Length: 287
Image 1 (tube, one colour):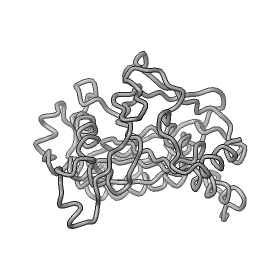
Image 2: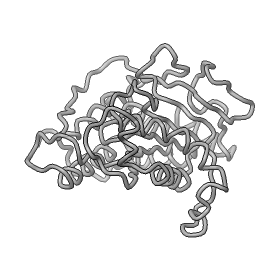
Image 3: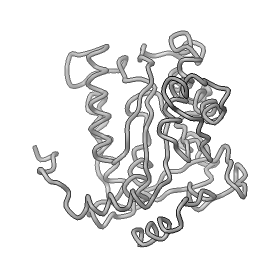
Image 4: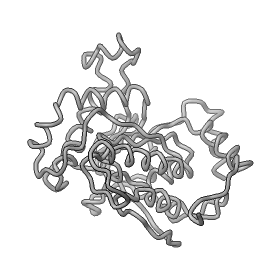
């Protein structure tokens, strides 16, 4: 019971967060393959620190994983891991999305994964989420190469840049507009996590910063979020002190342009707030 906070409406902290999210209109979508693939440090600092509307898209619900908390496997485990993801998002403040793919288990190659996950169906599902959530920034966890190890990871890395391009193309999946009312939406910047290649990072985001409202750093919040993946033995210590996460800019449609490989101060460089009044409010809330 000591792991759970007492019941609360959030009070002034919750109100401040609502105002902060009202001021920060820019949105970020992260794409991975499974529950627990997400960069919880990035989700926490963007959602709680920046106030950005942030979401994680997991291609599947983790039905093929292990279960260290009970006997359930397959669809039953998928339900457990779905609930773990939703519990994690309650802590880090992000939104959760899924596609229709199922976790078939472990595979070594992208080709093996695509035998189970039809290319057009996966791409359409990811484009649907982008057009619904309308992110300005898309972050891929994986590279789409054998470096990702798991075939499902490779598929998530493969589909992310394709969806970044297709989401703004009205010739791609026009039925999403006719049947679901989803207009094309072109994100501005596409990043890839630098966890596999730290030397290629173009932007570093400090996550060890203390949130004065919470009395904890964003990294500590992230570890609390990650610890919700109990079926996968993802419990983490909430260490204090400096910490960071890093990204590599792959493509930018910002104007003036930001070339891939260019060092940046933040992921929203080149993406101004749409409303000057909201920009001033955002600055005041950050200070």
